[in-house]
Image 1 (cartoon, rainbow, N blue to C red):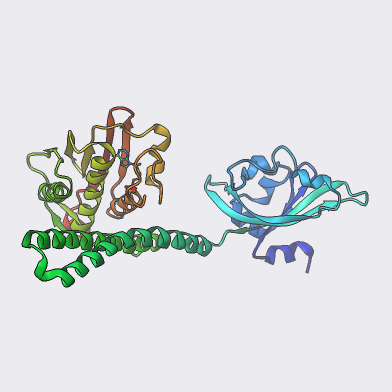
Image 2 (image 1 turned 45 degrees about the horizontal axis):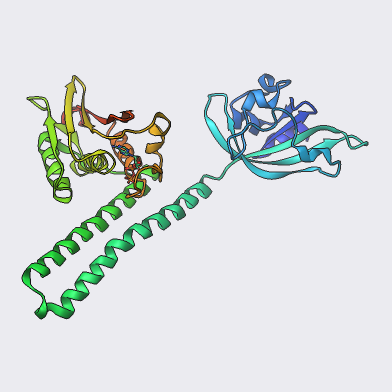
Length: 353
Ligand code: ADP
């Protein structure tokens, strides 16, 4: 078997570079990994072709080799995780390792790199640990309170006044809701990540749903003042009412927590094939740099009192997208923000067809 045929059988991508980091040779797995053919790659500098970046996002192997290569004894390229850009412009995380090639005087002649797509499972596992630690923390406080109040009620039942008992039971009730919600969110996360989220669709009356959400959030934040403007003949949507309620609750609660409970507006607009619901708040807004990041998992702005897990918007976007809609944000710093989600106006019949 020729050397080339052998290389092509390797499951890992192999690439050989010359002293100027231009592509000399590669195998079939390299073509599959990068989306470029060898003919396209040969002679091109690796930096221009794949835009490799280290964990800190800085380009590597563009200006020169790693400074450590000045030492003639350095032959191995230590394993590292980098990000490359494929031919279709998609970013891909890969693990790289390899060896430098030196002539008999120890001068660097090039390198052979071995690339392997980073194991997705490792990422999921890492995210899993992160989720567990954040959420355990969030679960503990309501449970501590449930335990505390129920112990008090059990031990001092005869000595407590009715209104004290009522207050404690209300608190337990509220904390139980919080735990239930967190667990629902957790289940949603794992289902969204594995594509197993099942929507229980029915015809939903949005006006009714908006009222219900405002009433519920209003119980927790009595200062809430919201104006609702929905189309006269608000069309019904074929959607999962619990999930839509969860999204809207998250948006209204965020507006109350991070902007202001006053001056809130919930607007609805129907245009032919979709209905859009916007939650408009009056507040300090979100700086442009943070605007796209608020939808990432665990992101919480340092300036805002961190009251949540940073998962709310990530989940909401996932839930809206599962319905075939979109969730976007716009904000004017110093004025306020608008969060808008769309839901396609598919009818039940269309959906079945
Ligand atoms: P959490 O569950 O922690 O509230 P979210 O994913 O819902 O997390 O929100 C992420 C971050 O986005 C929040 O920590 C907050 O800084 C910012 N944010 C969300 N909604 C608003 C808003 N209406 N106004 C200003 N900042 C907001």
